[in-house]
Each structure stands twice: as structure tokens, then as C-alpha cells.
View 1 (cartoon, rainbow, N blue to C red):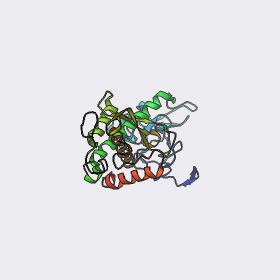
View 2: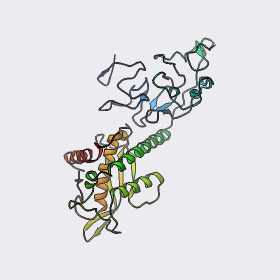
View 3: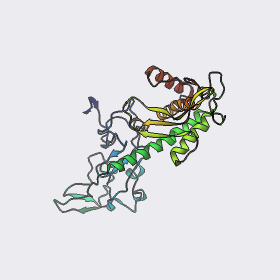
View 4: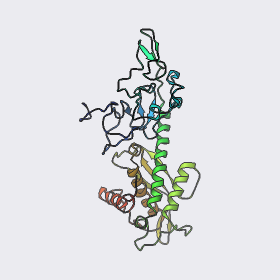
Length: 325
């Protein structure tokens, strides 16, 4: 047993602390803190959500390393899976593990027998007995190359967008449910209108516009989604209007920016990400429509946690609980 952050764990055969799916996606609820050993002896970085695998970084969401295996000795023509230089444990995480990011262990528990300083190491990346003697005292394996801050930030943004794509697809599915769709309409049950064009603020149309502008840039009409670390760790996301204008019906915004808290978004819980996306979409549509105060069921929750909790509960009850994540 080991203890981290005041929590006692029983390590599994991979050296994991906590519960994980085969490729390392977290099953713990609530999620365990990052910046500590989590999956298969890897330390999970809170800024990027990537796992530090001693010699390179691993993405549990993608189930792949983010850089290729630099050690050519781990390729084995007899085992085609070893030729994929980004794959985790030859794409067989049930029987193999890879604690150093360089060498597969064929069903053998940690610690890694493949890489040592001055010993006998397998030339083919597995414990097959085809060994090459390494002179005592010599260094075996490449030098670790640290990522720059910009590279880590880019990795975090790429991961966040990949998770957004998942949440986007589930959100579109949820919006096919009339009960979910009703949350985004006016109290009278009609669609809200764009005060500039008179177009219907259909949540599917608005969501697609926000996603496309996030993906491609440019101007698709309503704004975009960004990913930033927010000061309030408990805050999943915020929505702010841009281009404040006035109409006969009241004030409105010509565009919106939905900001997701990248620190929590990149944990990769698709159900929670989908709920957050729909929650903020509700605020976005209300901001785009003309009038004073909330124009749909999404109460202004900028100042009151209870209002935010109610909005989230409504989304979970009417939209996401019907989905199969």
C-alpha cells in the first residue's frame, strides 16, 4: 500500500494508484489530484493532463504516446505491434506494460527489467531471451528531453479540443430530445430570436457555429469556445458576451465567448464535459437574445452557486442522463 495526498492506495500490477481503464483514463470519482503517480507508475501533469513516462509523455485519452519511441531496439519484426512507434504497450494494455516509455514488458509486473545502467537488456524490447550484453557502467537509453512551456501549452490545447469534439457530438445527440431542447427556449416555449437578423437561435445551429469557429477560426456568426485556467478551480466554465447593443426589446450581445476551465476540462470526463458545454450554451443563447435578465431556463449564476447548481441539475436531468457515454 502507498499513501498520496492523504489517500491510501493498493497498487495494482502496473503500479497504478487508483482505478483506471486499460489505457489509463481515470475511473475514480471524484478524480484524484494530478501531479502525482496515477496510472502505471506515470505522474499525471495537471497543466496538460499528460502522463510523464520517464522518457516521454503519454496521453491516456488517446491511448498513445505523444512522441515516437526513440529506442530502435524495441522494434521486433516478429511482433508487428512494435512497429507503431507511438503505441502504448503494443496496443495490448491488458497483457503488457511500459513503465519507461521505451520498452514493453510482456505481461511482467513492474519494475521494468529492460532498461538498467550496466546489465543485460533485451535487444528486441521484450523478455524473449534474445539479449545483448551491455558493458557494466554504461548508460542504456536516450537522454530525457524536457518540453518547453509553449509545447506543453500546445499539448494541453490539443487535448482540450479533442475532448471538445467528443462533448460536441454528445451535446448534439442530447439536443434531439424535446425535453432538453425546451431548456433553451423562452418561458413561453418558443425559440429565441437573433435581434439583428431575426433568425431563430436554435441551440443546434448556435453550437455548430461556436464549434466551427473554435476549430477553424474566422467568423461563423456567434463566437467561439476557449480553454484557459480559471482562478476558481470549482468553476467549470463561464460565458461572456461581446459587442453589447440595444434593441426595442432590451440589451443583447452580438457574440459570445465560452471559456472552459482547462484544468478540469482536461480530466476527460465526457459526461461532465458535455453537461458543462450544454450549460454554457444555455447562457450563450440567452446573451444573444434581446431582453433584461435570463431569456430561457438558464438563470444568471455568475454570483450564486445555488443557481449554477440548479442549471447543471436541469441539464443533467433533461439532457445528459439519457445518453450512453
